[in-house]
Image 1 (spheres, rainbow, N blue to C red):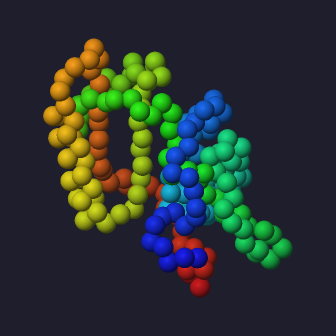
Image 2 (spheres, helix red, strand yellow):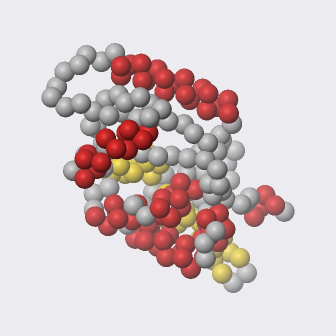
Image 3 (cartoon, rainbow, N blue to C red):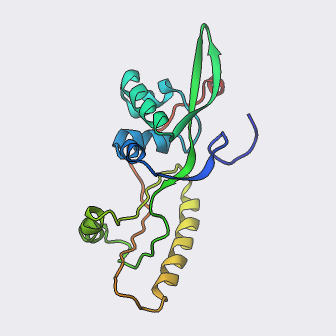
Length: 190
């Protein structure tokens, strides 16, 4: 284990483009999305993931296998526990994407209801580009991050208007109650 403060605690690619229907289907399930989000923090076993999402190990193991078969998760290390080899899973990349590189425009950043309604047509046409990320961070870091977001919003607002299509651009940072978290590592509790 290194003393590197970067998360997660294993090597991974920066981005991977989703190029198959299997990958898109794998990433579209809410439980699998939660598993991927948890693994942004550190590698985890099926047992740890099951505890975090409060689901049976067999259910979580199934979803981990779907993600691994799609190339989105991999075993990043193992540990011998009695007669069993425990697998620690990690993401294949920090970010998975498809269709990256499209331009976006501005919608009032506090009006997610409008953005959700406006984006239905783009979603149906396969043109919606979005990401959601979760991170346990202190309030001071949220404030610093939001200042950067505001600069981006102002930069976007200053773009010369041209082209035939209006685009929506929505951002937000918000606390999430009852989001699953991994239990402490086994080596941290002893």
